[in-house]
Amino acid sequence: MTRTRVMVIARHQLLREGLVSLLSGRPDQEMVAQAGDGQDAVRLASDLRPEVVLIDMELSGLNCVDATQRILCASPSSRVLCLAAEEPPHRMRAALDAGARGILAKDSSAEELMRAIGALSRRQYYFSPSLTEAAMLACREPEALQVSAFVRLTPKEREIVQLLAEGLTTKQIAAQLDVSHKTVASHREHAVAKLGLRGVADLTRYAIREGLARA
Image 1: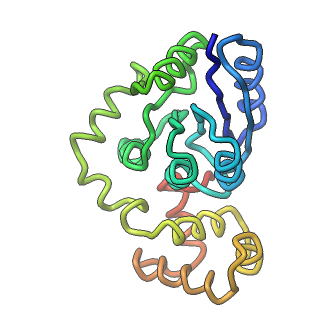
Image 2: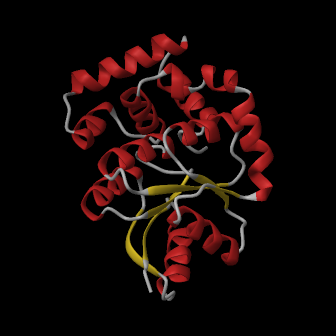
C-alpha cells in the first residue's frame, strides 16, 4: 500500500497533537513532521518534501498565506490543505491564490479529514461543505481581496506587521529574520504609510482585523 506523507502545522498544541494522533496510526499515511509556526514549517517542508501539508490558518510567526506560498516554492510537489474556522472570504481567496488546494473546516469529522487528504493525494481539490459558500463568494468577489493585507503589503511587510502585532520588538524581529534593525524599521514605516496608520498600536489592530494576528 502506498502511504501518503503528511506534515501538520498548527499553532495550538492541542490541535496539532490531536491531528498527529489521528494520522499516525493509519496504514495509508505517514506522519513526517509537525510544526507550530509558519517559519519552521517552511524549513521542514524544504527538507522533507511532504505530499500533503495540513496548515492552520491561525499561525504565529508567519501567516498561513505566505507560509503556503513559501512551502510550495520549497517543495513544489506538496499539496496544501488549510484548516479554517470563521475566515473571511478574502482570506480564503488569498490562500487559494497562494496555491492551497483545499480548505477544511476545523469542526470536521475525522472521516472528512481523511477524505480531504485522500483527495489532495490524488491531486484533486477539497472544500468542506460548510465552507463552500464562503469559498465561492471569495472567487466571485475578488474586489474584496484588493483592500486586504495580501495585496496592499509585500510578503516581508506582512511578516513584520504580524511579528510586531505578536509583541516582538524591532530588535527581536531583526534577530529572528536575520536582517538589520534598519531593514525592519524601513518595512514597518512602509507598511504604516501604505495603510495610512500612525504606529505599532494601529498596525496591531489592523493585523488582528486582517487575521495576521489574534487578539
